[in-house]
Length: 515
Ligand SMILES: CCCCCCCCCCCCCCCCCCCCCC(=O)SCCNC(=O)CCNC(=O)[C@H](O)C(C)(C)COP(=O)(O)OP(=O)(O)OC[C@H]1O[C@@H](n2cnc3c(N)ncnc32)[C@H](O)[C@@H]1OP(=O)(O)O
Ligand SMILES: NC(=O)C1=CN([C@@H]2O[C@H](COP(=O)(O)OP(=O)(O)OC[C@H]3O[C@@H](n4cnc5c(N)ncnc54)[C@H](OP(=O)(O)O)[C@@H]3O)[C@@H](O)[C@H]2O)C=CC1
Figure 1: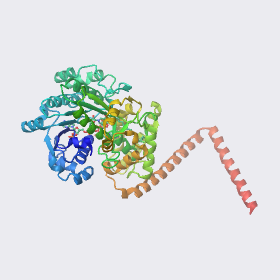
Figure 2: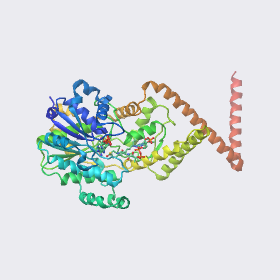
Figure 3: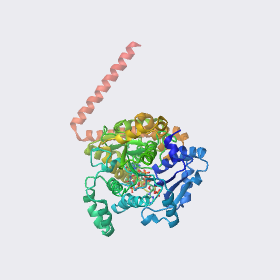
Figure 4: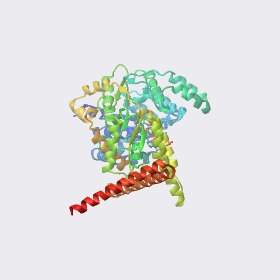
């Protein structure tokens, strides 16, 4: 019997961000391995016209939860959705709900965050810093609380090259920032933001670093741990390979590449692609929850869950495998044939953007206009290139993350727990993982049917022929223009033509002789 799974039996667990990518996989694993847990409280806000209950039903009815329904048929009764908005004071939780949370919660997993790179400082601080402080304050009033697990990111200190499992101080105290945001107006905040975030690449990573500092400062006598995953990718093994449900991180790039919109990217091919499967992160989270509650370490332990130092893969290898998978399993209705050019040179990157991205978009928009339709490709391309430019920082550098605590925890687990809560990324086969990842993007994100593959392959063949035809026509036009203007080009042309003619005559003569 798994000790970690047994630990969660009969427990009341509070999860923030349960409707997000990581939160859903966490809930799924908890229900599947510890179906006898008491209740999972989730803090949810209504969204996109859906009530809390509708949101919960949608999650439970998804393919991700199919196995859960077999082992835990009463899963609906074990989820208690609580109305909450982490942007508001006391999270806008009702008095009765708050009372229940405070008196019953045993374990907290704090996953909620804004992960947008371009969020405003005010909103990102509210969610990634102030809400964390508020949740810690709540936690300090929970008599039954055994562990508080805070999810940060391996990139919270990406301004450093080597990152240890420690909390690094930020140049400005989080409390000072929270206080000043209360009275500064938005225009001034925009002005001071670059000065505040200094060498952090964006507001997201900066506010996640502030969030960690808040955890350290407000820890009181709570048992707390911080988990820092790198780029969280599709599931590796559980509940099935390749599950993804949002366009963050590599997912959007895989779609844009598979659909032929993105054919070149400014990336350092040999830089480490520190992707980590979401189920690996969740397994570590559950093991850390158990360890923190049972062993109660004296200080807040930080755990890195990254792949680069144990089983590195680089962007080149990833790109090649992604392309190889598109050959076998193409996406439907691609704009152009998928291709992946990596360049670390700014000039070459600008060239590819002009020739391979913007020009085809403009040509396609002209075609749409001529056929009486609304042009849309240039706009879409501009947004895509803006997104890609925001990711560039992360695909042109490598970091070293130490993993002493993560390895220590692995050695503390029984062989059974190491199997059930496997977070040993050394066992990951990248080629297999990437293939399943691309397949998962096609099935679960794009919702494409596998029956459409033969048609997609036909379309790719047509696109290849159009590509060859277009290039040949372009070459002939350029050559014709050159001949018209340059004597030298004319001489070369006559030389080539007469050489070919002589060669053909010789070949014809010799074949007639043989007969
Ligand atoms: C040719 C090359 C071939 C390569 C072959 C393939 C090999 C694989 C290579 C993989 C290399 C990947 C490297 C990943 C590095 C990640 C580092 C993470 C490090 C930290 C990790 C963390 O700790 S935590 C999670 C990180 N947090 C995010 O990852 C959110 C980012 N995101 C935003 O901050 C907002 O998204 C932002 C962008 C402002 C737009 O914002 P926005 O207002 O314009 O609007 P939206 O978000 O609504 O998106 C509007 C339109 O952008 C499109 N789009 C959105 N995201 C997209 C995306 N990632 N890739 C493409 N396209 C995307 C979408 O398709 C929409 O298109 P449409 O309009 O048609 O629907
Ligand atoms: N994905 C990744 O690559 C990585 C993620 N992380 C960290 O993991 C954690 C989870 O990320 P991930 O699951 O990918 O992110 P998602 O964007 O998928 O999920 C974010 C979650 O936070 C919730 N949330 C946001 N704002 C509020 C609010 N005002 N009130 C209540 N809930 C709110 C969202 O709810 P709603 O559904 O209502 O919007 C959602 O459930 C984050 O802390 C992130 O920093 C760390 C490293 C990498």
